[in-house]
Image (cartoon, rainbow, N blue to C red):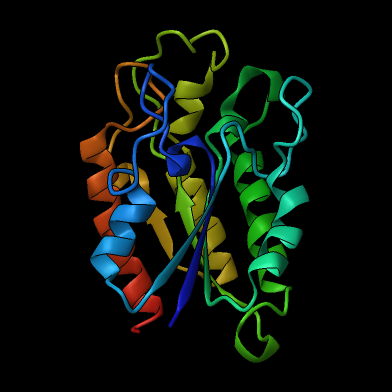
Length: 209
């Protein structure tokens, strides 16, 4: 049975816009993906609110994706595929990052994941990279993400360059879904459903089952 790990942030965790509570299983996109894939696939959700690609957050500790990736994947071995869905929190004003720097952070995660012998027979796992969609109308989080809306519109293009260079599939989420106008960051339930179906198609292309 192929094992798929989703390594993400609050949008993979299933944070409801503005309410900031967790959508139940079956609503959030990783579990929609699992339902679409069926019983022949196993899902491991590894998502944390505020997680960045590689950056230590001085306000919210323990959020660096690169710091947790290795022990995370080692703990779940053997596994077949990692979906890396990070980058939105890198848009926070306190990090002062360019779209290219955010994409380079995502690239470090791709390289680090594929360097680990956590796949079948100690092979490296397969990786799918997911680019965050552009931010929508910012409300309560506008100050925290000041300037992030313009940068977010460039992430799909920058992530595509990384995916091509690393030879991994890309899910450009912004081509399929949009963030909610309730807070500008998180996904509504119907967008989770759409993204879950898109992700399932991408997984089947990599792991036919």
